Length: 389
Image 1 (cartoon, rainbow, N blue to C red):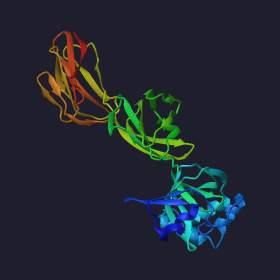
Image 2 (cartoon, rainbow, N blue to C red):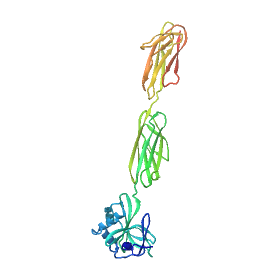
Image 3 (cartoon, one colour):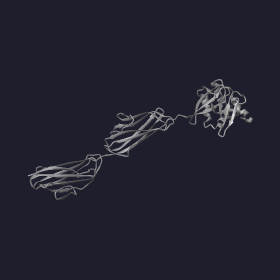
Image 4 (cartoon, one colour):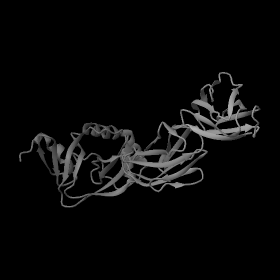
């Protein structure tokens, strides 16, 4: 291979070097050290010497120029700060190792040789230290004999991160299971370890079941994820029930030793259920022919939600005759008394109606009370027995 004589001073940074030019990148092959014309800086004999090289006001611009020529994306001040304080260790460049670049000199000017392969007889003894710059980890290696340095990329800085999402149905009916799911996402570039996830249990609510080994205490459900891969997600769910209608709020937390806790909240509306109670009575009983008795009907919504279109009627048996009702709008048609429909009967509310009936024939009368509503799939009925003599 023919070597360009103009490049010879540069290529002797390590001594005898063979140069090859390709279409994609230059490469160099170094076989010996110690050319005084191309060494970057004086020999270093100790970590103290190395720190002095990087702290030298005369050399620092040359360090920066080499890195500029290489296109280094880091901050040179990070390099200088690390050289002053970080641990410096013994290092070896093995025979056959290719370095991403190597500093050198040409006529005293700093030059950057790319892709330098060490092809000498023995490994090169060097010093090395690692440092962080612009989100990545770097290793700076400096051969002791010539102080020609290079920097190699060790990858991104380890960054731990978590995201948490809480989800629950928008609406559930009281008595139904409320399924709350938490999705944990590793947003860092290292796996999450021993990630703790906590879901406080709202008051009047209790846990029925949990996924993935979640443990239930009196007030909280807890999970521990021993290993969450990079960009991995894990869904954790709990089945709950509540004793009260209204808004049910959840606020969960995920954390680990390496991550500041993250939170997520979600809420569901627990709708109640109406529950109709029908109560009836007659007074007096028995009643003589020609005398009157009063029938009373009370309808109570014992549930936790409104009921609608509550319709109440009384069918008086033939031994008696309905005479009147104090309820405005009540209609008496033959033996049937119909009361105005109640558009909405709120939870725990009640309506009470009375009907005056006159005994007409001796016997055992069976008066029927009927209630229908939006909630009831079929009317409620009850019978009151009245003796007429």
